[in-house]
Length: 430
Image 1 (cartoon, rainbow, N blue to C red):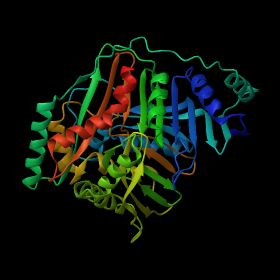
Image 2: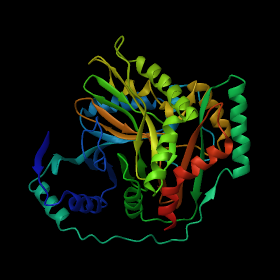
Image 3: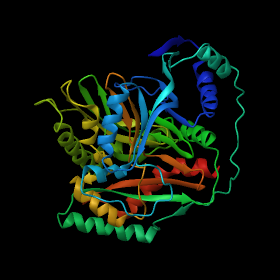
Image 4: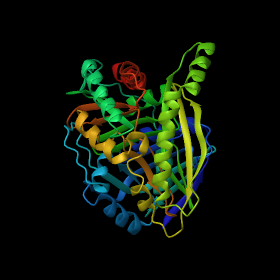
């Protein structure tokens, strides 16, 4: 049983800062933050889960079956991540590209301590709470001194796994596959990385979040592995018997000039190539959701809507479905994984081709971070706009991708990748 208490901090913003600093004493930390972005399907303003009571870490082999067993037995809140390489559990695929990060393919934990932020209140849930532990922790959080560390190195040398000319050649190879009818869209990704580099993960996350303010931000610390995510994209959510997926396809940069910014937004609305990208993935998501949906329940609620974030304008669609109460939550995720916005279509062909052309194992990039509730609901983001860090290996990485279709221009695709990478490069080099 969980001990529950409602707490009303004097300032929720100040309490958020303090609790994040306080959380760093634990080996297992997952922080999810909506940045108060207005959205129809939001549950909490922010969530913090710390200190594992039980946990699971495994490779992709039978990964979803192991997660299903773990989540069923826990029958509680569980937080964690799914890497892109779990595709190898879903289909006859492999991941043989170089991997400097070495994250487990799947990692989840049942937190002893849970903080659910909503409307200037915090619902605190402790598992196996002893004596005055909860009250003592609240005092410790309120007394935290907001002393931020600075990274030990500011001269981070970011390298590319795929250089510009090679990128053009690879995009042209993708276009040949499209023209030959092998695929009609593919999400081609490239890695930016730095070796022998140390960063201050929490401060780096705060900087990234401050300039991006995305609705699906995440800070993950699992021992020496970190994910600092400024994701704007929801992968999939379950509310009772309702499933919601919100794929992003279509990106435009922002401008400080109001008139020019509005023009950039209107150009994205009118861009046939970007709309085609989005609609193709919507079809793929509809098909994925239909595998577990009750008959006739798959519905496109929004098609190619424009959402504005601090760094970019994005084209987002919302696809929903209904499932029966008997449908296992992990089966819903497995039947839609990896998310179509990060693969292409047809899904399996696109993943096979990308594996040959990409120079790095994607790992947690293109995967998902999120949680399951005791009621078998869940909510997961798409791991994009994310800095990944292995503190032991001193390896820092961020990847970006773009959808290649028959109308793609390799130069424009390359420029879009740089727009997506800008925030991450800025915080690492500042």
